[in-house]
Image 1 (cartoon, rainbow, N blue to C red):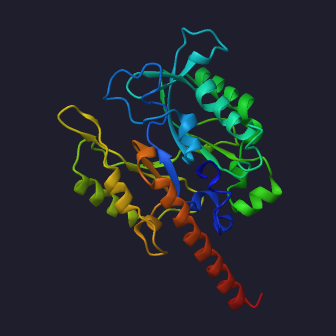
Image 2 (image 1 turned 90 degrees about the vertical axis):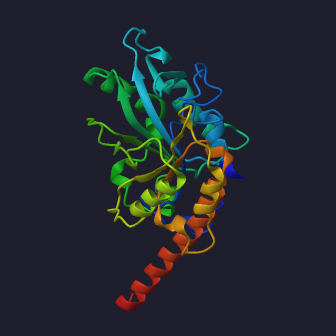
Image 3 (image 1 turned 90 degrees about the horizontal axis):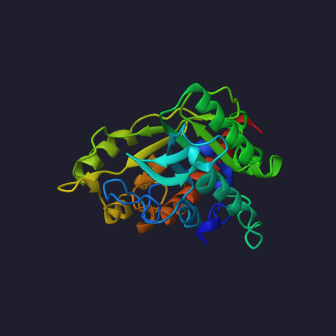
Length: 296
């Protein structure tokens, strides 16, 4: 069900991509199953990016390290890192994974309307040439799926019908000549890795009041570390409580992308699915009201 939840969500077609309420994973490529997952301080997810997206995650938070010592064209030239490399690569674990998600014959039609945001958010040991090389790699693998930023004004219904097969937003948090890429996701982070859940909630309350301009991709970083071992905290019970979707007035309606650690432990995907129904219906009602006032 969750591998195709956007396709099955009522009223979501009324929303633009930047208006969606989306489940994201924080430090998406550093999971327990990663080749170099040795230090608990770095591991933020239980399962691979492939399993995350199959479980409904639709925004991947990607931090990429460039290895100039690796031969050009080799996958390990661009690796996912947190503090150190997880051993996962952009080429195989992200780009090939995305293609596999859409192209698996048994689920191809059911997944055709799922939208991903790949947030290339942080870059380590990069040069201008490395950025160019990574952008070329992204384009060569999934460029034909890319939703150009020129299409950012379209609703999902318009995208699905006018641009079938365009399903992936490349958000790139660095200047690039590629006009199709979107700016990086505006990640709202408290600036403090170690805090109580009450302090994190207070920060979230502050972010919830902030205006988001149209077409800007914005996330709340709902993640923190816990002492004494300084490891990513699991407060899934709080996430389930805070973001429980009941109606159009639920707290989750104040947010857009919600990035969490241990994402598959919580009900965040289900709550996002439910919340988008209300947001989409409310927008449609608002548009109908405006049309009636204008005499259309």
